[in-house]
Image 1: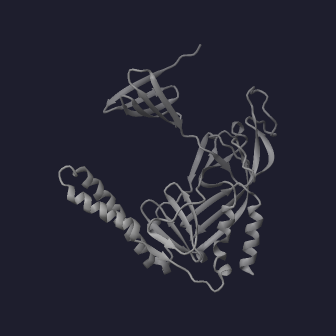
Image 2: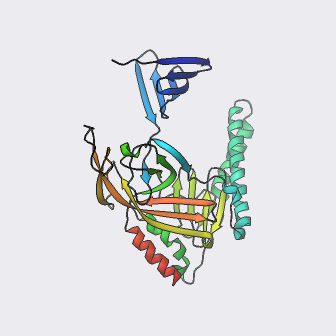
Image 3: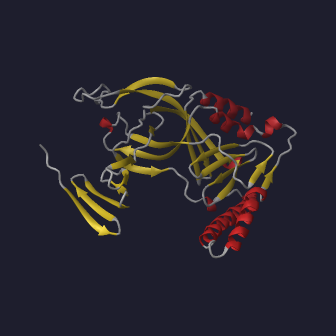
Length: 339
């Protein structure tokens, strides 16, 4: 029989601090809804219907992780040590020189769109008292959304050569699944983390993203979207847009590295993925299964393609693709472009 120690301190305003043997957590909420940050680092959201006993609990904080190129990875959360974020910080300070005027026009449209959104919300609040400003702003917003566009059109003498810079990204897009690597973590307990000493947090991206509403082109660029960030690959430049800013970069400023990564995968294996090995959850130093654990499942290790794109050490895009054959296709494209 074990003892459980727990103390909850009410700070008012819906805030509570929870102290237990596991550590300190905190929460905020009202009757029927509460968000809790647990001592284990997970986030728990509880929604209920007061007086009925009906509630719904969702706990998150453990996302898919991959390893470094030569180590297998897992879909579980390792015991964390040193964490390094790989996400881009501020796009406003990065832009290739030839595109600064072009980027300035795009940024002005984004800023004006943000202003119209805020003004429309304010006008909506006061609409019962002053209807005219709301309707004027709504008309302005509709016009701005559908008619204020910047055209990016091309005329090619040799379309194949002109589109060659986009070819690597079209190749990556051909994989069934593409993820973005956003964070690397060193495990403090690799023995119980499938033998992994370094892992990487990955998140799926949308391979078929759309152009921002203010852009129109006579070609179909490759658009990758991760959360609020878009990577738009045109024949001669790359646009990167986040919630607040946009930048343009030239291909000559880009460096490309690619290789293989082994990934311990718990979900349904993509149809274009090769399984190269299997790994137990708990292992001994020699890699054999640790027989002290009755529940010691074995998972497949998949071979993925890893591609890293960097621009002047300021912008970094780390992608994983489910099809490892993508690497041979990338090698052929690099050789063709260098010849």
